[in-house]
Amino acid sequence: MSYAIETKDLSKYYGNFRALNKVNLNVRYGEIYGFLGLNGAGKTTAIRTMLGMIRPSEGQVRVLEQVIGPGGGGPWARVGHLVESPSAYPELTVRENLDIARRMQGLPDRRAVDGIIEKLALASYADRKAGTLSSGNFQRLGLARALLHQPELLILDEPANALDPAGIVEIRGLLLDLARDHGTTIFMSSHILAEVDLLADRIGIIHKGELVDELDAARLEELRERQLIVETRDVSKAREVLTEFAPLAVNGHLVLKDERAVKAPDQIATLLVTAGTPPTRLSVEQENLEEYFLKLTHSQDE
Amino acid sequence: MNPLPSALWTEALKMRRSKVPFFITLGFSIAPLVGGLFMIIMKDPAAAKDMGLISAKAQLTTGSADWATFFEFLAQAVPMGGAILFAILTSWVFGREFADRTAKELLALPVSRSAILTAKFMLVLLHTLTTTLWIFGVGLVVGYLVDIPGFSVDLLRSKFLDIFGSALLTIALLPLVAFIASAGQGYMPAFGWTIFTVVLAQIAAVTGWGDWLPWSVPALFSGAAGPRADLLGWHSYLMVLLASGVGLFLTFRWWRYADQTR
Image (cartoon, rainbow over all chains, first blue to last red; front, top):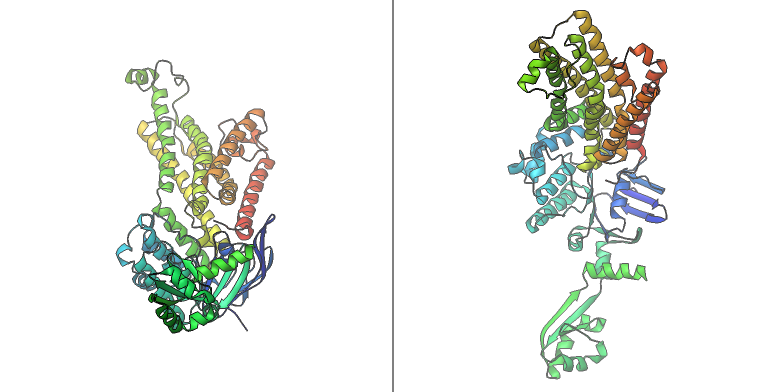
């Protein structure tokens, strides 16, 4: 099977420090791959290695089926990227910055710049110097540069950084559109787990330089624990009634992780009503990605 | 689209929009103006004192006010000023990519890193040569306005070669500045290097080893310290060439192979 990005035993050492340790990661064509990790986990090192900016100490990276070697050679006309915080020449306007990107991508058509300015809602800032932009618009400019040449593969480091909530929703829609309607492969790192949760088809979790998990979003759904939240006016009495389900009292309500309880909240309600402490709220909630992520990384630490 | 013209267009736009290259040329323009002032003073020191141009303690009352002296002043100013101002330009052209954190945008592109570096060096060469011509031109205008005596076409030709030659030798040493601005990832290491080489050049020239030190060669070539045939040998030019080649090699190699983490 061929992959848009494939790393084999990818390692990067700085002295004794292992920034990446035998990372084997596969990004399929057309998917949105969410790359999760704490600060310093190795996300940016991995991304820079994929883009030929850092040479691996060991292992190999293939991008769009081309081995990335030293010296900057790679299928870059087909790849758009945004690494760490966006950057631009501050004394140049938004349009000029994008025109530079257009030239460097070898795009002869000047209209490509107008198109991307329109798409990223930068039209009212097009003739403003990049150095005067707000951080949100600066991020948009970085994204515009990454998308300008309509790449097959997008490698984005924290694409939602600095965007306001409306901007996040807008960029999410844009990325989904690119992946679903245009077949663009998207590899995105993020610390905003909810964002990854909403977008990604697959998720890779990196911790202390090691890829600790790589799984489909559907599989992640299965793995995440579900729990029944019970609120009642008499928590201690309800706890006695539900002892066999090992309830945990958390912030004035009960949490039941027992599968019998999660699958049959109606029976729990009956038990509570019969005991004279009817529930004021019953809700089956799924462990969120943050909880799953923290559980996984903590287990790696232990 | 051809990579080198694209890279040249890009680098030229960055230079045009920035104030740094403009101010470097403007700052250098002071040299012929100061030379003109000296000529006014030397022509008539007593009048200059009366006008308040110089104080009673001034040493600048000897020497002849003629075109040969004026050109010699320019020939000293170009390698000395160039060593600092041209180095500032070079460290800006290369170091700015790190100061503005734009270096990472130059690394994974269809246009090769070599093409981008070649464009940067070509633009530095073009700007420094243009600045040298500009200073020479301003010098001619200033000299004409001050009405310095002793002009001849032969003198013009010979001093143009002195000034332009010393500028070329100064420019040849800039690749090492480019390398230090790149490997040091900013302007400051390159500034430090420039000051170090300027001081070293002075020491080497004073101790009589200037012909072996590339950074002393441009000033010695200018003829300000005496006939260059007495001061420099073929080995001097070879040392400049070597320093230039090492600088180019290291810069290209660094951009190609070093880990880029900024």
